[in-house]
Image (cartoon, one colour):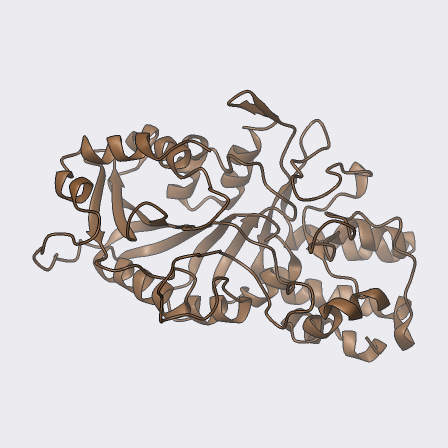
Length: 402
């Protein structure tokens, strides 16, 4: 990954000498006045205090490059926690460029629920708006726990040391949901992170956001092209985020080719209907602990290498199991819930931690993953963890014996 130098140059060039020279104790500043209510506040919550390094400098540079596209009635606010300095909040605007708004005096664990809530509430207080959009940027693993772990991982990985506020460096889905439920409902939540576009996560977050954008698989190392999606972020255009992100791949970044990225947009208002349709049609195949063959399902990782084997493409799974009439009826619900999914021309995606990265049946590709219980998953605790999800209850999986 690139060094952080370019990012620091940008900040220093914007008269942030105090922040550049003193990375531990920022100077005291007067209490800021809240801004006038804007049309929208866009929040990018970046958790980069981890290994391996994420492309902080590249993505912030892309944001600055396209900062002139931010409308006057939009607040664009970045919370950044990386390995080089204490967390800080920055404001990006067409007129003022990128400026530090606040630097915290101590290290924080940014995947701690209270830390996230305090930061987002502070941004909401000082950058009020009629609408809000949220980007969650970090490593991620979806809804399921690590093997033989009771912890349900989801967004974020923070490796800061000396934090007394959190025992975990990953944020669990219920914690994320509970934090966001205390804030104004978001127009969209965009996960610039791997594996987050799974129906289990979307169902948990259905009441805190209108739309959810992300990938059901691994995302390319460079992540989203922020210079291509900043207008969509500012407009609250979830489908525009998907199209802008998709337009950057296949791509060659630093002479490293990335074959593609899988993306979709979920309309959360349609998830209850999708849960009903899915449960009604899927349960007969799994009654009394039955386990249909899964070799034809589209996986997003491999059991032999990683901990992400629960990722099966939702639409492909239903396509393989259901008779045509039932599948067509189910697709009506799915199309309403997933109005847009993209698939690169290569039918491939970047798969660093998995053994493959190709969509085998593009006609059935859905862009959203779904867990399918199997006997062998008992070893890893995944079947038990699945029973604790809202999606499990909503679809009636309990009736099957799983």
